[in-house]
Length: 322
Ligand code: ZN
Image 1 (cartoon, rainbow, N blue to C red):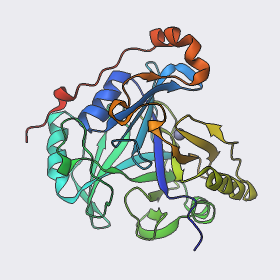
Image 2: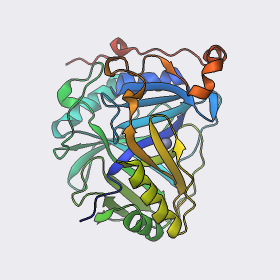
Image 3: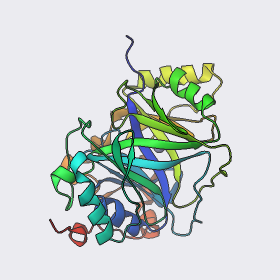
Image 4: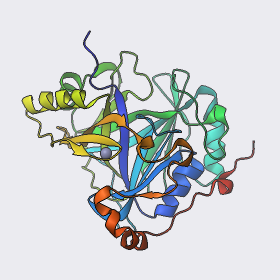
């Protein structure tokens, strides 16, 4: 068998409103670690905040562009409308209580492919879920006030909303190394491994009647797949170009190298390299502590720092009764 070029999910990037509310939700309530505080490389007056596991491994990284004055977006076709995190099987009650405690909008737990799913939203209305399962082999990690046995392990899956599944399925299977795993109603599940392990799963939920979404706060900007090496990335890029997709040249995103292209259903896809990762410019203990700028912006650090509103981590505000 040839080596896998795509090994699962790398990151999800979404748009948000207030940066402080964003930090409070993802680091405070969800207990993800703020692993990098930088700026949008294309618009350095806006933060780019990265949350993840202890070192921000691929498959755990949720990132945001928090724009103060952005209009709210609407979920719909052509979007990665739901981002799903993996939690241990016995942790549903813990999380539902936590959502009640902190006023997080959520729904009653439901079953999907024999696993319990809890749907919830962040403060900007971004569609999120937890899936409780005993199939996640990633090392447990905890940050802030979440007990280790209940902590989020990383992504479980991403849900794409499409008018039809066929063309996106073909891309996933033929250019991005996914296999069909299961289906239920209008949900079709794909994975980079045969088992559909947490962190490797893409669900297409298709509905030709649903309206198209539009971007804004509370919507995903793009999703990224993980590829272990620069050579693998170039190989994927060649496959995409041969199949007629307009993949960008490789862009240096400091913590990974990226190519972007639009999938047939309208969602922006990225393929990002595992290296160099978030330890590139900060030690494990100090990840996310200082504002990191790309080298070409360093000369105007003072100016950029004045444009950005200060943000603070407040783990003590988000303690849960045990
Ligand atoms: Zn990205």
